[in-house]
Length: 102
Image 1 (cartoon, rainbow, N blue to C red):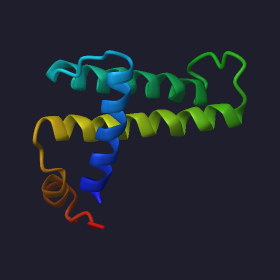
Image 2 (cartoon, rainbow, N blue to C red):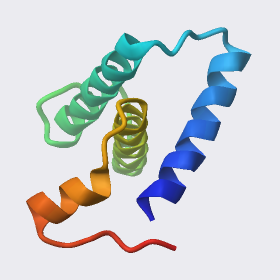
Image 3 (cartoon, rainbow, N blue to C red):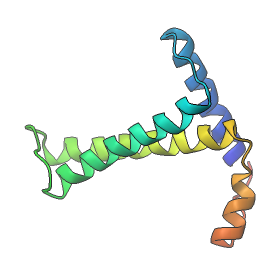
Image 4 (spheres, rainbow, N blue to C red):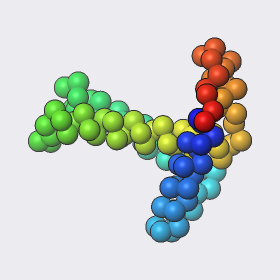
């Protein structure tokens, strides 16, 4: 499961980087992850009344929360791939289950 997701995110990220002339060096992966965590935090603050809604409806906030969570997931997987991390083994060590392949 994880390896397939990683390859899909890698393809999408590579395509985006080429189209927008983005250099994905080692720092980019961790900095982009941090940027996306900031965006997730921002929308969480809006959802929980700690930040201005800027006219967003509950539905728009819920959609943005899902979108930003997807961005964080993608960038975690990209970071792991770039750094040769075996996330499946780490999940097994830390969470006590092995992600299913396929």
